[in-house]
Length: 227
Image (cartoon, rainbow, N blue to C red; front, side, top):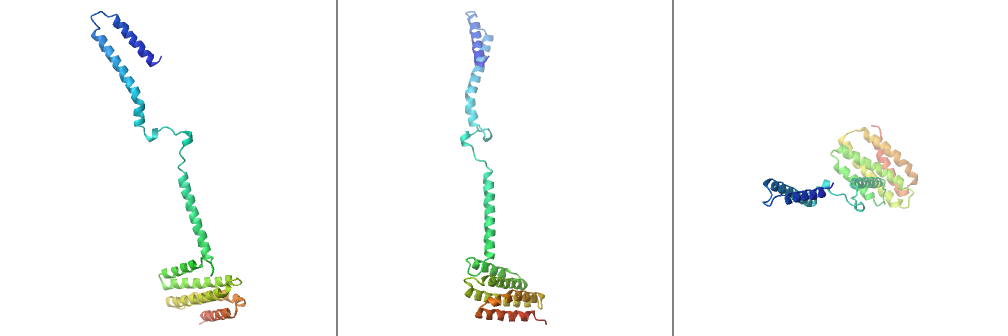
């Protein structure tokens, strides 16, 4: 039996009881019970009427009604995933750019950046021995660049300029190393390595370039000569 039906039957019973009472009016017990029943019904009705409004006003995010199927919120995990993918892409781009810069030869668009990085490393070195090592590494790099330039369409002036840079880096590095580590075995080792790198290039050089390379070989042969 529903609550409304029970309430109606209770009211009918009270009306029947009231009709059967004497003309002097209902007694105090009846009035108390009627007042209690009416108050209970009124309070219940008001509570039922206020419940939806109060529930909406005090609704917390955890109890919020579900969104319609067509307006579902996107999963929050996509943002971290996109951020991770962006970070990986950035690192990959930096690695590719660094590799391309390292492989650049005179005439390439990235070559000035490569030389600037080498110069910065030399300037940031804290000791003469470290600066000398950087300068000698640059000289070895110039030798490899000359080997790669030979046979290319732009080898002419670029080879000459690179040979000159190689000799300048060699002299600067040797001078620093002799001050920092007199009679260092690193000098002879460097001279032997450079001799092995430069001599195979001689047949491919023109007359002017050959003169530069032979002058360089004479210089480093003196460094490798036994004392």
